[in-house]
Length: 114
Length: 218
Image (cartoon, rainbow over all chains, first blue to last red; front, side, top):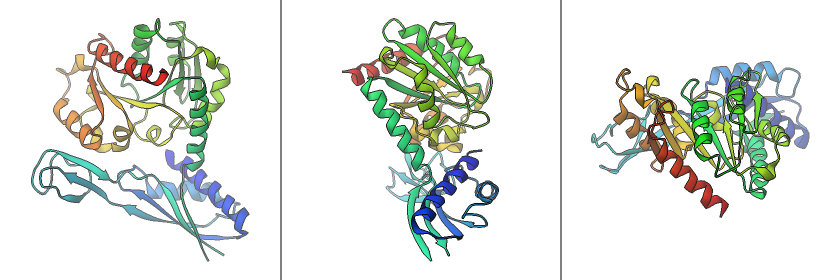
């Protein structure tokens, strides 16, 4: 559901840049987010397509750089990439771990424009 | 042509939240953003908290719901100023909704503002509203897998109340896992085991909250 609001915010930001830089068409928007931040890329593209109609952002493709989820283990002191938060360290089985990356919020990195 | 942006998509909301924060600071208002899934017991916690400390602090409440005023009606019975925000389908409260609700209150007569967010474990954690602390509830029937599934809210919260402890013998809730995984997301998270129905365990929450408010008001 938050994809609707996020898409609207992306379009607002694009329009501010279009007003500043004077471009007329956006080919693609490069974005990043952490893989555990509960963002659904397909829903976001859909919400974006619907709301971008009639704006400079119409037809732009969203390109996502998904940042990895990482944990740190306090037993083996390793930093490991994980798919989701594990109960124990996947490497040594130690039970004190902390999630150090993966919930980064959605950012716009770059626009490709004409 | 490439245009470098590097900007948080929710930047505009963050700025409104900062303006709200300034206003709250001017009036020395401590603000709690209370979050959980639907039915975890947010309104019951608000009621219990009001009953426990309403003689000590002037309290106001903002109730966020997609529709209806059931929750606001419950709070109004406690003779506390309450504003209902109907988000009209939006799954969270954002900074602007709070800004628009504030003129309904006399800010000089509030020590503590409790914002009960829309029931949802995902979106409310992303939107700042100008709060001092985020507080979340997880109720035992929901299951202990929630920290791993919805990590952001656990990371963002200062306190987690594990609610409906009175039901724990009837539901398959792994308390040890819930505590362990929550702390794996947020080492500083303060965890309370409570029942908002029986009031068991709430003294520790109230003592912790009171201390936070008093430190802020100093």
